[in-house]
Every structure is written in structure tokens, then in C-alpha cells.
Length: 268
Length: 285
Image (cartoon, rainbow over all chains, first blue to last red; front, top):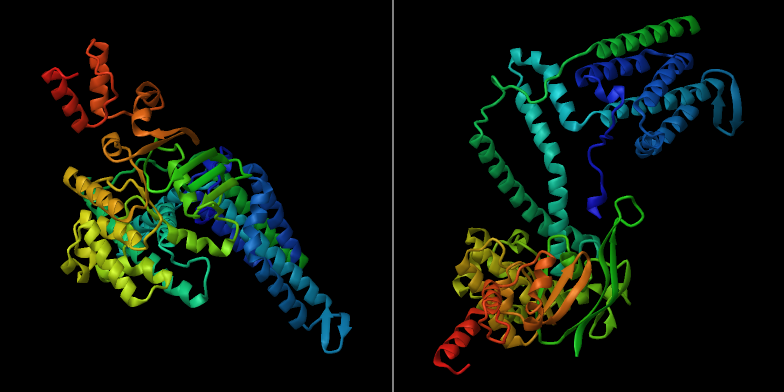
């Protein structure tokens, strides 16, 4: 059923990572990604791996959640590995069969790419697992607020994002209801040929569109009734305050970044 | 003869996960052909889940649903035929309307049945009349109609399939009293004409009291009782204990009984109450 899909990967918890200032978390994740991409050998990635595992342990989020987040990109991982194995031609040949040549360099690059991607996904999942989507958009708004000076509608964009996130579960429920109603009138939605199914999609999409417009209209009225007039002079329910732990986390990340670069230079 | 029958019908939501919840628990009941059955129950009592089993939208976790004595899940490929035989009108059905004209929307179900155009036309005109939609409305866009009219279009769409059993989930929710009476009267007239079985879910005891032959009460996923209207309302105390209400006029007569004015009968419609009081005043009772 549609209802079983989980949207928003937030995994509530009380760990120190959950409580970090979301603005810092975004910046730290950004530095982390930089760290993964500046490293050019596996030793440097090892530093990144240590950092990631440490963070996962502190967050107390079950390890299988990370496995779950990597699963969807698994085909992509395999593809990357195979491509690298086949097309990297330098180095000693380890295995040869007809035109296929696999070199030591190719194996190294494949492993390196896989580790890099896995770390990338695991690290960024940690951000979405420990931060609720609403807090995340709030933080993005704050981080981007300097752009307001050059007339980028940061507040409006953030508001649109929060509203979109807020309405995902509502829309899923609505779709489920309309699907049941049309099925009750004999529409073939999960069964039947591809063309009939496609035709019957109209019977779901039209009501869904109409109710979305209605909802948008109602929401706009409700917002206006509460005197919403954009981000100008608006105060917040949840103030974001940075504490010493945020700076410690940031400094720690930078130290790891420095370490990774140092290791990288030494190993090359 | 029973047109619908359930045998130990059980439905568990999200089975095997920590969120597992038994929504319908071993329900056994028989609904006879030609009856109007009122379905009552508190929010979350499992009545909506129960009715979605009757036309095969939900598959029971265990137990059976028999339509005309045959298990509806015996042959999975025939489940669509079950949906044509058991018409289900959801709550706020006006949100399922999508065609450009009222005519096309009413015809949608019939078209899915594969009927020919003449038959579809006949049925659409017939049900439009039954539900009180005038013929000139048929070529209008359904989105230009009033809320009550839209609701009637949606109900007509299911009625036009000529189901043996018509199930309506709160057909009067959110309507004004005039709209409510109109829909109920049209459904009553329709039932009289086609003599099918009608199940109607409602929170309004007044609606059900003047309408249903039998009442089915669900409570916490189990069948609380299923009996004739007067018998169910005579158990007013138990009914209010599970958080449901009996009609106001029934309450008045229960209070009168406590005051020593006993009419000796259970009263649940205004009409009946009026007659009783008039008789008493004339000294006949």
C-alpha cells in the first residue's frame, strides 16, 4: 500500500548529534563531502571512514538504517565498479581473458570509488536521519539568508519547501483514498493492460490536482488570516542557538579534514 | 437468503510490524437480500475497514466473505466483478469526480463494466432521475455544481452499476439538513424501485432510525450487535456505554418511563412518537 512508504528519513533521538545546531550540521556535512573528494587514495578515505563510523556510533542510529540508505544505489555502485575494472588500463595486469584486462590499478580504483560513494551516502544520511525536515529547511534558510541582499527570495523558497514536505503525507493519504474510490467503480489500476492503466491514471490525477488546488487555496487563506506577509520582520518559534558543542564538532571535523589532507600528501 | 455473509472475518493492519493493529476481529454476520442496514460505530471501531472488505478492496487477514454464497477471494481474477456487484460509495465521494460532464462521470463505472452505449445511456438517465438530478445538468461540468449536487453525481455513478448491494459510507456528512433529507429520500426511493440491499454508515441516529430495517453496531473491531432497529435501540444503555447515541426521541421516552409514564414500547422515530402520544391523549392506550 502507498501508506507504507516512509517519507522524510528523520529518526528521532536524543544523541548529541541530534541536538547539534542544524546550521552547523549542514556546514559540517559540506566539509565532510569536501574531505571525501579531496582525498585521492584509500588511506585518506580510511580517515573519512573512521570519522563516519565515530559519528554513526555517537548518533545511536541503528546500523541497518545506513544499509537501507545504501541499498537503492547498489546497482549504481556495481556499475561504477565494473566500469572502473574494465576501463582503467594502467598498472600491472592481474587477470587476462581475451580482450579483457584487469590491472592492479583498476582494482584499486574500483574499491576506492565504492568506499567513497558508500561514505558519501552514509554521511549525508546521517544528516537527514538526525535532523527533521522542517528544521533542515529552517537551517537552510538561515544559511542562505545573506543571499537576500542580492534579491534571492530565500524565505519564500524555504517556505515552499516546508509546505511541500508538510503535504507529502496528506497527498499520499488522498491518493490512496481516490484510488480506492475509482477501484470501487471498476477502474483497473493495479491490474489490466498498460494502456488501460495509463488511461485510468487520469481518473486519479484529475481529482488529486483539484484537491491540491483547493488545499493550496485554503492554506493561503488560512495563512493570510494569521497575517502572514512574507519573511520580513518575522520571528521564530524555535530559535537556533549555537552552543560550545557545535564549535567542538566543527573544529573536530576540520581537524579530521586536515588529517585527511596530511595523510593524502604523505601517502602519495 | 443472505446476499452477503462473513465468516470469522479478521483484518490486521501492518501485520508483522510493531504497528500491527487488529481492525476487524472475527466478525460473523449475514445480510439478507433486500434489506436496508444501518452501520454504526465509533470512529476507529472498524466499520470502514469492514465495509471495504465487502467489495474486495481489502483482503481479509483470515476468514471469508461470501457474496451469494460464494467466497469472493476464491478466484482473484474475478474480484472486479465483485466490485460491480457490491457498489461502494466512499465518504465525501464528490472528491472522486473527474470527467468533463456529469453524464460521463456517472457513466464511468458502467463503461468499466463494458456495457454498450445504449445501455449506459439508459442507466445514466434512470439513476440521474432516481437521485434527483435534472436532465439538463447532465451535460454540465460536474465542477460547476453545488456541493450537494456533486455528492449526488458521485452516488449516481455507483448506483448506475446496478449493484446487488449498495454501500454508502456517511452519505450525508457535511450536508445541510435539506441536502441530507434529499439524499436519504432519494436513496430510499431508489431502494424501493430496484429492491436491492443497502448498507448505510452514519453517525446520525436520527437518519438511521427512520431508514434502516436492521442495525449493525461495531465496537473496537468486533461486532457488538446486529439486529432489527427496534431491538438495537431498546438496548439504549449499552449503546451509550460504547460511546454511541440513541435518537433523541428515544431518550425522551426513556426519561418519561423513569417518571412513570410508560408507553410500553420503544420509540425511535418522531412520527411513531407523535402517533403514540395522540393515542394516549385520546385514551386509546
